[in-house]
Image (cartoon, rainbow, N blue to C red; front, side):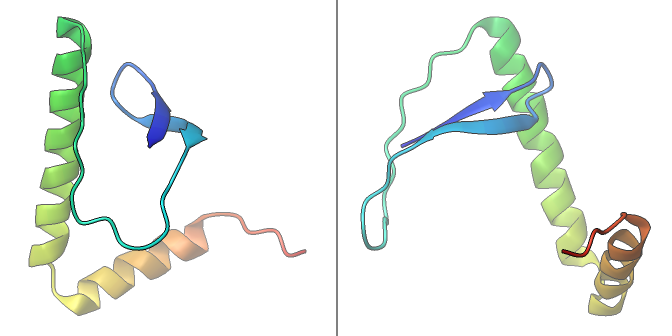
Length: 80
């Protein structure tokens, strides 16, 4: 079980709890209760994530590598 803290737009802010079993889980059963506002936010966030996955699957590998490298070098890094 994983509990996540999310903002109003459905972005995950933090993982607040995790309980897991050993091995591979092949089936997941979920009960979720949302207010209407939260259901709409979840729906929109899920749609954005699916859209992003779909776009990344249609990009050629060279473009994916280029985008990854740009992100890698644009972000500040601290060596320890």
